[in-house]
Length: 189
Image 1 (tube, rainbow, N blue to C red):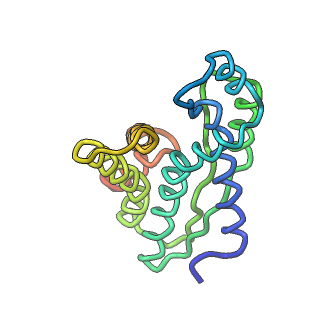
Image 2 (cartoon, one colour; image 1 turned 90 degrees about the horizontal axis):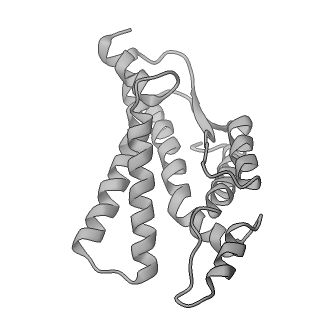
């Protein structure tokens, strides 16, 4: 079985949580409208249209990043289970509720059974940022070589930036970030 029922529940919770957390930052502005209405919309606790847009442009970056770890671990024959980190999601939601100007999102992780070699752990760790790298470059190339309508252009720009940030952030060789695991595998510790 690729996914357990609980993993599917976690992925749905993650998707909607990420959408909510980012919904205050990615307000879809209509072509016409009063700037005051946009300010009011940004400061509401919940706006379904902004949440749908945020889900479309941000959740794939986070969800597919985690699934990259899971599928590479499974390719090595390891048991890998996606889990949400309720503290990390809770902090992100609280920051959104209080109107914080910054976002902190540490939504989940993939738990892998023991028995992976250092090399395997390095490749498993790199799989998440690799997904973000492909999504970043892919969306950038689409924007460079194709013309899209306004909404698609905005969505692809945000997708490109989110994935670029996630790629570079996760490649930092510090603490629990993927970059530290990759570095440890590379130097053999």
